[in-house]
Length: 327
Length: 272
Image 1: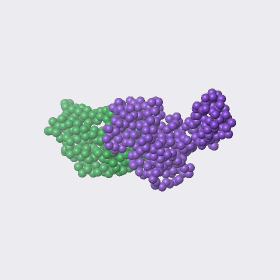
Image 2: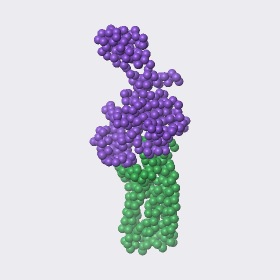
Image 3: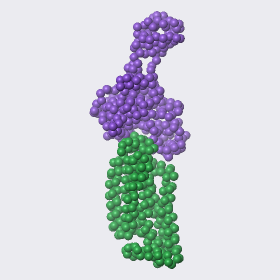
Image 4: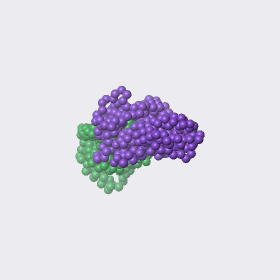
């Protein structure tokens, strides 16, 4: 996977031509208004190649608008957008040819068969070896047996798989997924998340929108929390954890549990509690090696040291709580 | 403009239409009614009437036609002359109205249908340009209408030649003016109406609204097309050619403006 993307707080009104090494997706102060409604407010982000970036937020946060702006399906009202270093509004065809999009609604043609839907995409993207690609994509997503059936008869899971197969048929460099697991059964959801990991492992870039925080867990290199079209917080999950959760909680166990009580007197421990195992809170996550060394030095034979990373869900609600306090 | 992609859009729309039998069977039934069933009934009745009083009344009908047309009417008896006049002059509007009905029914659904189904989002994120999408959908709405026109015209020709032909000395249809009407006048009228309807379809929010708006727009056009088609068949060839030329200009203008009506935001269901 690539390096973590970065954001800038100040939104620029213009953006220079893409420099070598620039992100696959670059937004600077991207704003989209529909009359008085601001769908996207000065969104600034940079996503390098091979990264999995997640846009988190409730419905109406501006996630779908962001995806549409990135492919040029919708021009921004203000700000600058570069995808592959190109302006998607002016060079839309070149941008969209290299993108694969799974919209929030699968956007399939119900009266056509699964194969017809895939063939339509293959021909619009003008790929070679159309039938071989259709077969390969269908097998990859487990819908090969349903290709000859009309999509109108597909289950929700099959529709989602077909939409994914269609979006990846042309081997896109950038995959944009808008709530791809909404309404899916666990098996299909896992297939989607496996695909995302696989795409990133192949060096592809993934931008995924979701309000299901659990599915982003352990997957995202970069997280941006949106609400009402504006960025509430952005960064790698690790960065966000450090910024939002000043104390790191660690679960400890030892051959003699009572020996762990010495930890309570260590200066960087802000909280100590022991029942069978001990749970301590460090004032700085970087003190974890110190904790282990100090305990060992005091003769504690540790059998378990498990730092607990806050979940994305906890991060998300912490951001929202912070925002509510500030508001 | 990439014609390959344009044709892919058109072909996929046609494939969807072909798979929607509940949609196209009624349209084919209407075409069959006007091009075959009604003419068979009418011309068989006219050419086999034995009631002399009725024959005389029908003969009076021919007397109401312009003198220039009366001179061209063939047949020995008043009822055969009436059948001939109806076959050549009075059924002309069929050549316009039926294909217009078919194409406008298809066209009114096409873009707004993408929005309603959500599949417009797929097209909006595709490499196809707005122009390719518009022209593709135009072709998909035009072709079925014109196909109905050509097949219906062929069947109608068969019907009138088989029923009326033996009474007037052999096959007489289509006349030269009908050829010009079908090959030169009808295509631009179809293109004009479909371009206008697609423009509506790109702007409204539902298929029902598209159909209602389309009816408002196309009704005057259908009426004028009816009048022009009827008048054309009784005039000299240059008049029909001129009508066709005007229609081609109007169609070109409607196409040019229609192409600009398709925007990606509208495919997404946004923007008026």
